[in-house]
Length: 326
Image 1 (tube, one colour):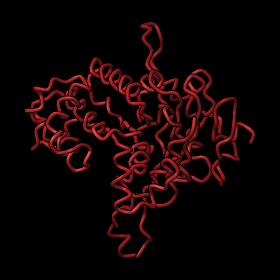
Image 2: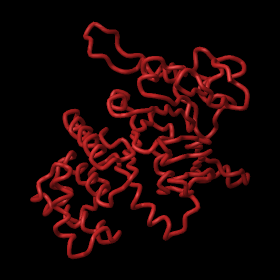
Image 3: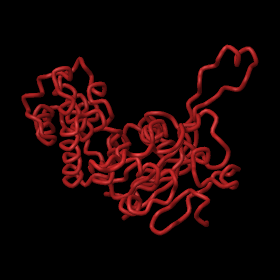
Image 4: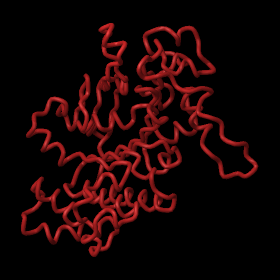
């Protein structure tokens, strides 16, 4: 397979507002270090899972790839072209080829527009088809995501969460993208609806030959739909490899802790352990060295000092941990 997307040393920082004391002392502005030098490669036609605790930078990474937020530094190569260097016209063309489905289905749709108007707006603005064909294309998009054409006359407030998410998927797919980023797009839905939306994603991926990045904190979902998994902790990728390899033989202590925390269906099993023994450090003031070392039961002296460990090969996976030789 050839890479459709390559992320190189991507960094995203969010500046914090100045406090009164900082203004008085003219202190440098503090930043939230959301993404810290991430490197990823997404092969054409595959589904990559991106997992980690809330606040680890997963959504920021997905949004930075599509330039919904601006990166501080790094490169995002889409089919060989650096997305971060695109001008307005180039970015408009890129958005036809790469789309995102967001977490909260109701919030992602314009409440003033009907479903039909929402889809027609995308087709019209991006000139996906002739204006005369838009009216006929809208019911086709609804049927492709398992919705009746009659729903086109309704607004988001009159739809269930699952129906809204299907409309959001139809809107994303209206332009025939090659890359689809799903940002926690089933986490706000009931379990039964989650299964329906996941099956829809898998069907559409086959039919449209999509490349997908699936951002989620639900490891069981990721195992079901993804070819490879990237585990993220405080803005860095700490483990990356084939899904079954990661689940069968996790290398990084953080990945091991995440997998231990998965609930089990066995009524006699002990309650799942927490992902780690304490809360993660603040992304405003990260520790030197490995960011996980304050919570890691296997931390060594080398883990506490800079630089942070780089990804190194271990079996079929890559892991950023000093427990494994370079």
